[in-house]
Amino acid sequence: MKLVTAIIKPFKLDDVREAIADIGIEGLTVTEVKGFGRQKGHTELYRGAEYQVDFLPKVKLEIATLDENVERLLEVIQKAAHTGRIGDGKIFVYDLEQVVRIRTGEMDSEAI
Image (cartoon, rainbow, N blue to C red; front, side, top):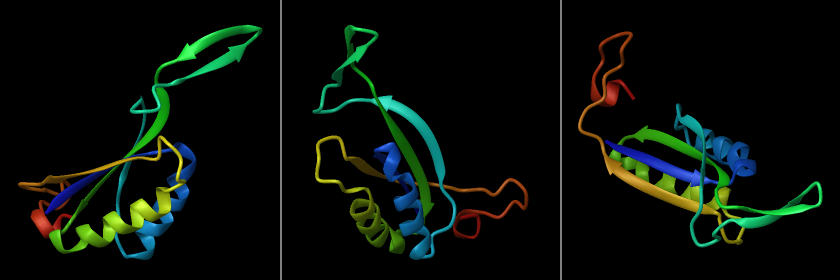
């Protein structure tokens, strides 16, 4: 089992969610986050004053899935989140040791 974490641009969330659903993967957690990578923030103008925005709004997706689904999941996230511009995001894959569904007590693949 793997935990796939993707950091994407907020306006791409619906596209990614639909792409994930289209390949039959159910369930994800979405968190609004802020951060920066190579784009290093940007300068904005507010009421005539210029100020630096260091942390940009992003969306973090977390998806627990079976090992055999990981490659396809990475492909659809990358394709759906891609704009070709700096700041498109990153995808991380972690090993999951154990998963437990709280309601039923099901474990591992049955809990996903």
